[in-house]
Image (cartoon, rainbow, N blue to C red):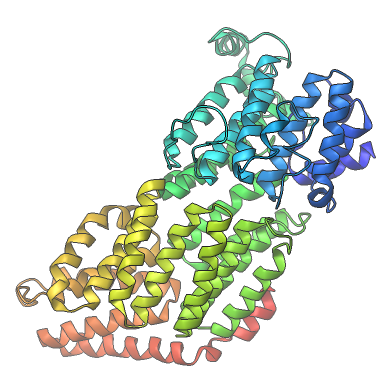
Length: 590
């Protein structure tokens, strides 16, 4: 069982996180008895029985740890449970947090705390235990886990125990980065777990002293020797390389920063942190973490350079990580296929891809909630593209109920925005305004700056739909969100913003096209170029239609005919998606 567990652990992407220095056997160091071994197999390895049997196994693990007076193993077991809850989720924590074997187990029994709130309790207990035992790497791991909790969960006041002071409903990347900074500080002190903490600056001073003693020829010495994970960052042949397990945790912090800035809405920082992980921590990173970094880079590429380059990069990544089954690569492929199908108007393909999303998600309640939410969101968008407004609204409302039930408040911002778009496209702009405003409120509470700018754009489009009298109000909203939309938004968001800007000017009775035609033509031309890269036929047709109208006003017949021809081409492609070869596309990718 030990050898098989180690092998599957490497596949799970967590190898070496808590490994002691100089010890080749992870399991022999931290699992002195069968119960805790089963805990790690069920929780960390990701075995299919882990979701159903994880709480029961963990209860026995804690019992064994307490019986053997092994506080260190108990702390590691608590961290394993947190890892399980983060990766897949569970519908109940009965037998886990409410276990009689857990110190303070009365927190879970007879309380009204949600699973997420109980998880926060467990995280803080695990951190406190690791700090008291001076398990520096486990402290770093728990800091990362708390940062991830701040990123994915909305903090609520835990009124069932402790101080009654309210906790702000905010998931701010500043708080996430604060936890990551504390984690990096601990990772720099990578002495053996259980030893005393080093004084501030000792590690850096020792590293620089070693660097000064090294000689230039030693830089090239690694070219002829075999390279191991411990060779990572062995700069200038310094005699004390950073252990791979420490580098892996440090690399994981960059992935969390990447996710944090993605929610916050800073695309350049998302790409920067993903690049840092992929280039600086590739040797020490787990396969899963490295794959995630590549996925982030491909997603960025699809948003800013189009699907052609994204799929080219995807082929390379599929070959590099061919051993990963059911990985994020398959999910990324489905995401790209669905987005491109909607842009091309290939609704049959889009619906078929939505069905594939449903297959990937677990049928167990409370498990794979992020994936289930994304599948429902994409299903609703497919129905919206097919002009099935009632069905799209029904799916979105069901998704809202699910997000509310499982405290997925951040996702509710996207759901409200979707409902606003449904009403906008159905021609009922007045009914869409409250949903857009609700989405704005969610985004402001959770610091989702890019999504807030997107909601502001939708709000401006709704006001514009109410008539020319609301053009100035819509223009004011656009000017407020333009810096973020143009600076951090992808091709689609930028194009939508430019089209809305041109429509606001054209709807304003005080604006004269003859006085300054570039105010309208420049954003429309930029939008048309970006939409053609995305093959977004519907919006591209609208951009060329508006350009043809402006050229007609200006008497530029040749330019008008060229714009009209492009409009007709995109409209034909939208109305006849089968001519684009979507069947062969599906056969090739799925």
